[in-house]
Image (cartoon, rainbow, N blue to C red; front, side):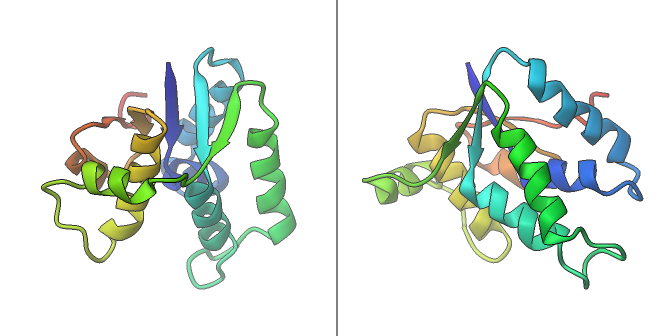
Length: 146
């Protein structure tokens, strides 16, 4: 089975000042021993980089080097594959978002959902309840369950 994660879990794991930090860090660390295929998306990678290094969002933003190092550690895990848009992405976007009004902050979520749809990934770990709008996804909040 395969799964993906949303950038919010990576951000919580990197931000020791937030209440979700301990649970998110434990979840991210467990990826090293998870037997399932971890499908990491380029939009998740770049969302993490954009937000984790942004001085207007974090009091102590990560340096670019630290943020990339964190991502490299994930990418180097044995069961990680990087996925992105492929040919015929538009039809998968349309199927993934059918019946969903996509606007504003839901646009990047729909982009991520469509990539997962295209690659047959049905489980997404996220603390963002907006992903529940994409009916093909099984959305699991590992922070809530810990």
